[in-house]
Image (cartoon, rainbow, N blue to C red):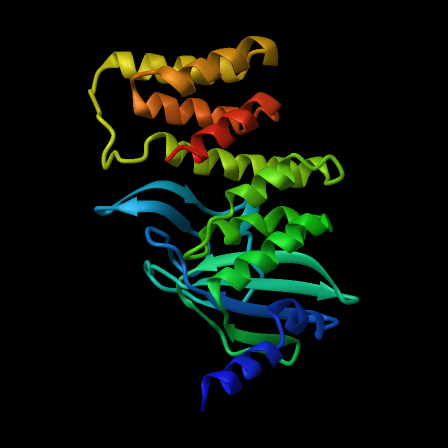
Length: 262
């Protein structure tokens, strides 16, 4: 098969968006490669930023990971793939679940399995679901996009976070995941955080949390100063995390600054 014919065939293949759109009611599911450092048990635990047997971030039961019954065959701990299940009603995506690792159970008559798709195409589709602002599915679509291999989505998250026409819940979800990405960027190049094992670290971490509970005009400037200039990378990460919860435009500006540094 020559290159021209192959290119024409690829162009004619339906996009993920179109394949999902062919299903009016029921569950649509697909899988894609996870970025390095992402692990899960195939059901209710997803960990990321993992190296040397340790994971800095983890989500468990509740929130994003309340699961529909009988979706999965579980496993102890897998490095992928990312698996997404969409619930559709009347042609609209009404809910979305994310798993890492494990495998799907044999589908019933109301399940359409699209198989493995490109991680980049999956991320683009999921971000489109988020921007569509169609309820809970839009809030939940950002997480699997973050986990997709070979993708850089923080500019898209920044655009979503700054779009006043998108609901506050979706924008806050975008800001939260921007905070995670910016926290990583702030400590780029460090393989391990220094643990002094002393009381002073605990006191400082408690102080960062206390600042996050103060009124915005008091807490945000202090957290910004910690995030930009504190010598302890763990304290910088904690300050960035709480800035991600603040819904403050100054936090967005900091995230953009950190993520655009070479």
